[in-house]
Image 1 (cartoon, rainbow, N blue to C red):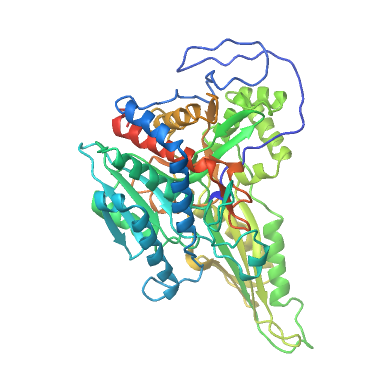
Image 2: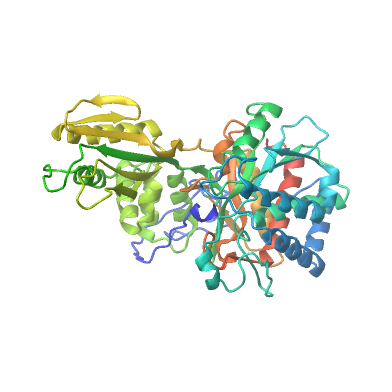
Length: 563
């Protein structure tokens, strides 16, 4: 579900209000202060957006360098294209209405994907212990020689279904896996079979070089991330917790943020938290009858008033210094050359000045509507039903309001907001109000019920720490991979934590580790047309770079004392 990751906001309203500012290094030697309010070079550290140095494998330096050479070869590129294409050609679609595994035959296509993976990576299947959970969930266990905490690399096998009427709009068949010399085409190339294949290619390459890990590595591949997640990652998480224990992993890395070029400065944006989720259904019931003798308000009319009340009272945004959006803002203000200088100064002042923080929040919200989604709980009335016949009074009308819950809020806070907002309205129209299983008010003219539609309530995720340790190792691995890339000419990258406004399979893994990261090692421009839409395609040059990242990350995890 990569489309729901961080948006690195780009500003057009440049303003120049000269005023000296100097960022002092906390962890690296202090860089020179140029006396200007402009952005920092990625090679200069910032107190408001600490950058850890590139972390290259030392014990396994020779192995890392040898594999870098191998990954640059034409033969390896062709192999990567071939195995991703073969995986894409299996239409592993997951649907919102899928039944349980064993009862719904639509799951059976995943058995074919498993055959493809085993045929493409026989060395991985022979060397690692492979366990199938709930039939189609995959767990690969690569045993290490030490007692260090193991870690998890995750991805998902399923894809969003292709709507039949859109097939004609694709440049190439959506399950062709066609390679045109630049792009490999098909559903799942971007979300998320590229991550899965890159991980397996990295492990296969390490095995080929007789690498044996000191730290145990687990691969966990769900198969319904694009729908409920309960059949795949839900079962996998329970299996992993039962097998290894609660808080038994050093970290977990799943799909997520990308690289983004902003005015010549590249940002990598691993997600360190996700918003929560709640669909609230408002169901209004009144007496029926013939429409020739109507009451003052039908159930549909009453429902419209409840909907209007919700929309007229949006949730308040909040830019908190302890929140992920504030950390992201500080990184962009410090390093992005596209950031307006007056906002850059305001962001710096907001670190300690409450008045500046308030003004910064107002300016950000005015600059781009996406900030509203990042800084607060959003609400969208997406479904409405009511009435069966033009001359019959509707006895029931309902609406579903989709909420994405802010990092600083909770399901309970949102539910209480709805109760407080709608209780006076229920009393005004003499309606009984039942909210989330509790009787709130009594009335004789009808009944309104607030409920969790489909039972999918999800709290905002725990926020992953970004101090020294797992975050430093991830950041260092990203920098080492990027800066040593044969395509980047030793250029540097800024790594910033980010908030995901959508949800991934990581929502099931919270009990396993507090260090959960969501990052996919590719540029946003490596996707031809995004995910979940027509003409999904992945730039093949990025395949090799992704394998390089996972290789360096695995080697760094294996020899690091940061965890």
